[in-house]
Structure formats: structure tokens, C-alpha cells
Image (tube, rainbow, N blue to C red; front, side):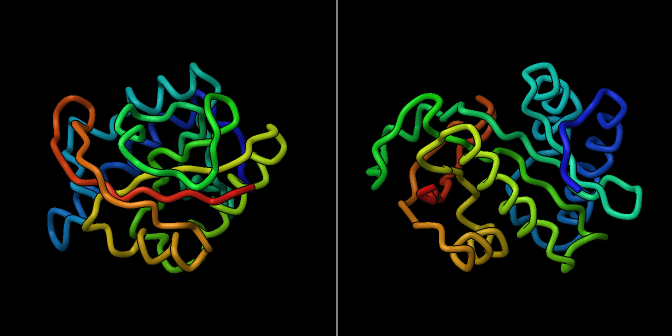
Length: 172
């Protein structure tokens, strides 16, 4: 089940972020995120206040979080999108996180399917997203789900991290 998050879910969001970041510190850093910089509980709180914080539950436990909104980073203007759309015509998937302890269960795929239905319900024309160019699992997932690879551009992520992000779109 996917639902809008509540204040009671913020601590769990932070736990998920930390589990991902700790796992990557011990293995491979696919996201290029930095603990204490992004993502943080504060990022989840801002999404909650904006009404764009979503959580996935399984067996009574939150097993995933995401921010689904219409905010396109300014760097998106550097790319050639195949679906012309602006503002509320675009649903952007930000910070879709499934903790490593829950991976391999289809939760990310289900969350993306939810985002597609949510975008259609909102009257959006397209879903857009970006991921670190080295995030091979996410890139593979989005390609398998039929997202168009738009290209890579340099982002100044959270005004803290310079990185190349690969961008995708899916027409609705």
C-alpha cells in the first residue's frame, strides 16, 4: 500500500536514508548521496509540509519513501525532452528510496507504477526523474520500465554536490 506520509513517518524515512547510506559506505555508492547532506529527515519534512511525501507499507512496516511533486531542477533545461510539458504537467520523482534490507521484492517497481497512476490522476503529461550516472541499479530499473533515457547533465545537487545525473522521462 502506498499512501501520503505523515509526521509519524519522518523518523522511519530517516532510518531508510541512513540504512541506504551506511550500506553504500560499506559496499558501492550508487547514489553519490552524502550522509547528513542529502537525503535527510528535513528533506522528508519539507516534502510532508508540501503534501508530496509518500510512503510504501508492507506487513505493517514502511518499506519505501518518495517525494512526488512538480518541481523540475533548473538543470532540466539543459536537456532535450521528447514530451513538451511544464509546471503541473510534469510529475517528478525525487528521492525514491527502498532500504537494502527490503530490496529485490519489487517495491521500487510498484512505487514507480503508483507514481504513473498518480501522475495520470493529476493530469500530468509526463514523469521525469534523474539519478546519479553511476546508479546502475536505478538506471536499469527505469530502462526496464520503459523510461526514455534523455541524457546526462551536470547538477549542483542541493548546492553541495557537483555530479552528473542521468535523466529519464515517461509519457503518460
